[in-house]
Length: 341
Ligand code: KG4
Ligand code: ZN
View (cartoon, rainbow, N blue to C red):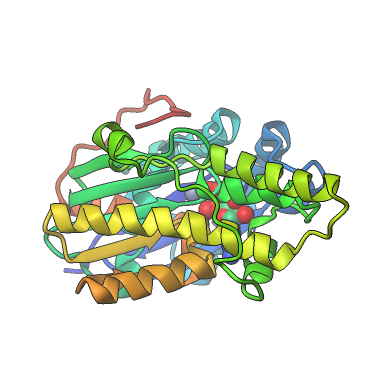
């Protein structure tokens, strides 16, 4: 008998995603984005995102069903992002999922978006090992997860205390007058720069900080250091070596992310690392993670970029693991939770 067919719906930020997954197989993943409408404001505007989800939800669903060549009545369960994310956008996806589940009389699963970023990797690299570490980095989150079972046992070892990695890149992008989102632009500049040109601080890495925040991150002070460095140069009437600033800043972020993650793998005796979230597109992070994982005998799994950014496939993938593990479905009164742990 074939595995259950799961419909996944994602709407926590600016992407409306609908995908169909059976086991570890992705049938189709349809995504609509409202990013173009937000870029001119230099950040995501929740009201605009909500309206865009409302407009795109049904067309995106129809496209996914038609491209996957499945009928709605063939779907065995509906999974939807219940949090974390923006309340308005989450509500649009949850309402759509509840209505669909009720209409086809199939179970509903409200799932965690951050865990979804790790779960999607099974569609690319197959079943997960018994135990693995997941680093989920994006514009909204930077979390280190110890995963014993993606459906039932995910333990957040640490997360950012302030800005997420992508958010810090976007803020530094703004102060360097780069277009929004600044992350990919800084990445491009950094590839031409010298990462050792400026020694920016690595937060929460001192012995004292490590005791309390061994696996937590903080990037807001780093962003302030970059701002100060740039201001001082400007006050002195000197040029800003954009490539070197970008490379040194990107190295500081990638250094802390990978050092803490590898330390966590070693301490917990884990030999597989999954990296997910939109920030995993970052070249400095990819290069450093590959180098350090190789040095420590850790298998590195990073899905292709289109599965790292927000999409319905990650939610359907997690939904299929929940169904396979026999987890109880959600009730129809489940709320959305903007700060879901
Ligand atoms: O996962 P995602 O698409 O959306 C969120 O859930 O946030 O991640 C987008 C974030 C943005 O902050 C963007 O600037 C950053 O990831 N980003 C990058 C790169 N590509 C995307 N940051 C640095 N280097 C990149 N190549
Ligand atoms: Zn995300």
